Image 1: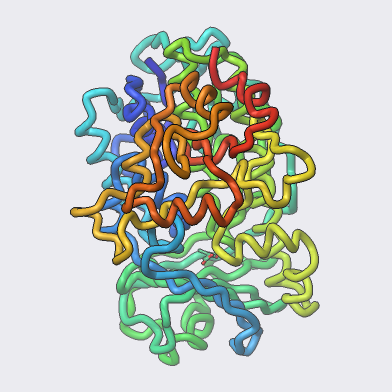
Image 2: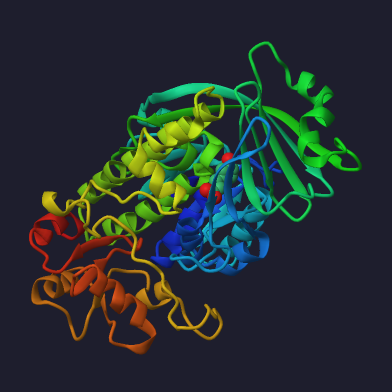
Length: 488
Ligand SMILES: O=C(O)CCc1cccc(O)c1
């Protein structure tokens, strides 16, 4: 049994993914009810796919609104750049950007958790400490666990128990955040808008049909009360009638931090999500990093607990996830800095971290390049290893969830070998057999797009992990050595 500390989205998704692996968990949270205020508002399609694998694709589709992308505007709201997202099905089988209200997402997750016989949710239970042997001290006594994962946010008790320290990647920024309910601005075309104005950087987005979010940089010496008093003037460039008839749901100040913990595991005590890293909101990737942690960790914990891998598999959790989360934190900090920079914002975007920036702006995350994933040095730039297998529709028409399974449904919860015919090349086939992988022949008509993806990438087969990361392709030179850590 695994104890998860924290019943926010990361803790609940981790519990659901573990249940899919057949692993029992108890989720503890000191609060009784869903925290009522929205925090995260955006997930990309990779993360929608993680929610799909957690069994809540339909629930997420119901509560989220596909966005058209990201627009950067200058101080006079003239366009500087536009990054479009597919509002239909993108390469991961979901709209590329989904906007939502976090309490609604948490309600969807809680419903799924309550339907799972493998998850027990204990609310109103405060964890006071965790010891190295995995004993969890809480109000009701001591719980013995095979592993403990702290998904308990920025003030994590579990992170403290690990003795981890924050590494600061960029300076803090304080912003004023307000949610209004009512008529959207006429100019709203489903884009997230970021105003690059050194005097007052700002963000606007529409979370729900009529739920509008603005964020404005709060300068030293200003209070949230100062900006609340001027709210009409601040939103007027969008609404042209100030706050008008709209209801002010809340105003608050948030200090955004850019930090990553230097240690994510001690024995079988681990941290994930905001307990391990805090991402400024400017590229909408904070919660996504937490969900990626859950996807990366869940199958590794399951294999270790089943005795299919040694504890050293858990070392690959931080070594794979920390550089990825760090890259996104740096990029978010860069975006936040550019919004306040008098220099031409696009010059910065084109310059620093150009490859990573390009990927994010194109809507694809960076590949994993560490842990057990070490493609041959010469092929690193072109290798599929470390990236996600696309979730192409399994028909040539549109994605019809009810009648046509998605690729991930065919792959199942474990490893999978995708071949261009038959059982696949010998080296990879043996490796796949050792990992208990299902073999999918992409000659099958529903896998035509995957077949072409293998051809386009000049390979006969791809071995895919339970989190859909490609771990080896044919010819699989060196793969057996790299992947030794995946199995006993
Ligand atoms: O990448 C996108 O399409 C949206 C990024 C985003 C989402 C939410 C807030 C934000 O400031 C940026």
